[in-house]
Amino acid sequence: MTAGSGLALVVIPVLLVASALDAGAPGALSYRWIPLAAAVGSVAALALGPGRVRRRLARALLPLLPVLALGTLYVINPTHRWVDGVGLLPASPWRGWPGSAHAPSSFAALGVGVAAAGLFGLGRVLDATGRRIAHIVLVAGGAAMAAVAIHQRLVPRADAIYEFTGVFANRNHFVAFALLLLPATLALAHRFHYRAIESGAPSSPSGVVYLCAALLAAGIVLTESRAGVVLLAASLAAWAAVRWRLHLHYGHWRPARWLRGGVPVALLLAAAIAVPCLAMATRHGRGWPGSGDVEFRGRVVRDTLAAWRDNFAWGTGPGTFAVIYPYYQSEDLRDFQFGHAHFEPAQFLAEFGLLGGAIVLVGIVLALRGARRAAPGGEARPTPGEIEGPGIAIGLVSVLLLGLSDFPFRAPTVLLLSAFMASQLCAAWPRPRTPSATEVPPTAD
Image (cartoon, rainbow, N blue to C red; front, side):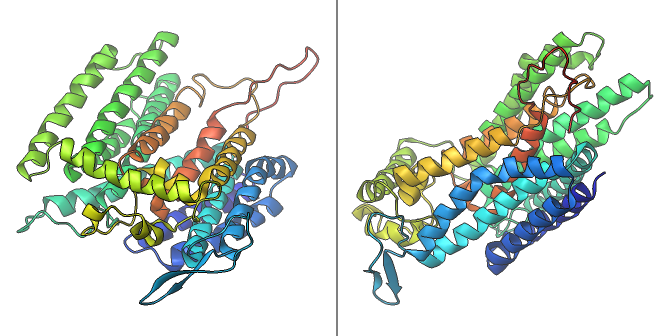
């Protein structure tokens, strides 16, 4: 293991644990100290790593620099100032440039963005050994968090109001955390199982890892999150399809007989999970979304889009939704307070606008593209792109879909973990390459 990878392997868990400890009520730790530590850690890993590591980190982080520069512009160019007892009053911004309606909120959002970029870069510094260790540590931490959440839900209490789910004040943030880790946990169990078959070992740690996956799934079910249950079922079905594809490609690999049913078995399992959860939700008076619930959320989204139309190009600034939304709130919603739009695309547009949002999305896409590893030479089969890659991708897609009904990326811990998992997806996802006949194929990084 290289010095840079060793440093990253220490810094990454420390930052994620610190963020989790601050998840109940994020403050200076999440918005200042963790971003500073992530930035320093990335620079240190850059200095300690060999030339190929520096090039890898540069490819991962350079496309994100314009995004961070955009966030800085929002902070230093306030369009309004906050006056206690009065609200927002117009300031004197640079016209035509990105500006924030509430600079302190945008500064906090910028800090989380710096931390996410740092976690993404540090994750890409890890070598193959570091990635395996980090994967195991994450699965163990996720299982511990799920066990805490399960304990909280099973302790008898007079009402169904819970202050925390795991370390999260919002249960859907725990759901996002668990959905991110569950498919990656299943992938790790599958990798252990495969290595045992290849080496002829009589047993493997895969059973313990499957237990960790069961804890994560049970934690999601016990939250009674409607979107969480649906996405849990979809994740299990998607992973069953991955397993089925692997079995077709590697006939020597003999999974348990009941897994040969592939997708049908996963769908039956998903139904077995969804039905009792629906019963619990109905018992507590929630049920599945009805027309009233959809209309209520639709009005919030329409109000949010109205804020975007008034700030079409650059939005109102990252992190400013809670401050600006009351000025656009429908009259029949005045009795409610909203910190988020419960629909990430609309809130993203309202805060960044069309031009700002395009810069952020292009920067992220280019960072993902640049951080992909070089095409491997003689790599063991199945490759990380066939096991770990699909597992991580399923988790990331699940959280993106959760953002259509909630606000998972507004929790710093979920955003940081998503950034790290994206770096691991890039590490498992090789760039297409067609070497010449005389060229020596590269080794996997």
